[in-house]
Image (cartoon, rainbow, N blue to C red; front, side):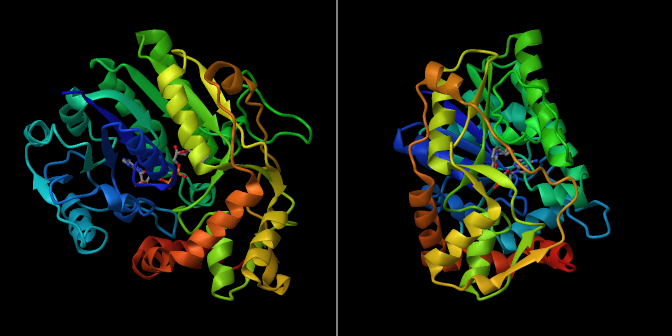
Length: 396
Ligand SMILES: NC(=O)c1ccc[n+]([C@@H]2O[C@H](COP(=O)([O-])OP(=O)(O)OC[C@H]3O[C@@H](n4cnc5c(N)ncnc54)[C@H](O)[C@@H]3O)[C@@H](O)[C@H]2O)c1
């Protein structure tokens, strides 16, 4: 029986799009995701059955680090995390609480899809899963820049320590490919007209991008030092269905649907390069299949827009007035522009983004209109989301 592809962070926005893409291609997948505030089993609903959702009971580290408004990190005991998961996020699913993950995975060999709820910092769990894994695609991370400004610690915990723990666990296993998903933000601000290629220096300017830059460098060092077949991809700003409601496009879309004001940082002229999430999924898979060991591939959307322009297009799409826009105090260290050159991915992987932004944005806005129960549930039940929105936008 073929081994599975391990997808960390598979219950998040890009990870779940990648799982959908991989399953369509018939790949066998094990998802490992801790279901933090951003992880959502509903993103993988179509693949979860009565057998394949596992919650290890003796996780070494299934503690969640909670985002705390006074700047401190609160750690919940494993039992509390499990209790909360079972009573809220996982309550619609049949969950198997397992003592012996290895034995359970042995029994589930025939399953095309398996979901293990667990932390990438849990060494013991990784060693139980990895014997069943042929390749690793690593998405799991704390990802929201604004949160990293309020609480950098969880970013260091997952993005740096978690990536290191995963790489280290893979070092002594027969892993044929390790794709590390990095980001364009590690290059830092790009002056107008400049497009960074893979050799540009890394100049991250906030805790999120600094943590991701560290992870990127550590991942590559595992190829140089130990020969682990690592490939790094650096995608630009992603957008599409299932993105957590605190990021720009879903946040503005949902607030506009609810006729709430739209808080735009500073002058709204920050520029981002937008990439359709399934174009990313295809690029990650190409890097997985065809990437050269130790190499880095930028994935650029080629669709640079000012934030204010994006927000106005969302309003237009929803038929809502521009009077909803409210300019608010900018966030600290806000990078004005990110921009990539992805000729290398085109040349070596045969990858090019296919979805025009205009079309993708329409589709995304429509998805949020049609999938209100998905985001309503997050707004009503996700305590951390509510706390963050209150605190961050209180004076904005
Ligand atoms: N969203 C973007 O625009 C973008 C652009 C470039 C790169 N990336 C990178 O792509 C990856 C995925 O981003 P996303 O937007 O889908 O993020 P997301 O926040 O939607 O999802 C992250 C997922 O990781 C899981 N996770 C977090 N900590 C974990 C831990 N310790 N153990 C196991 N699972 C954990 C969460 O539960 C969640 O499901 C990240 O590495 C991010 O840096 C994102």
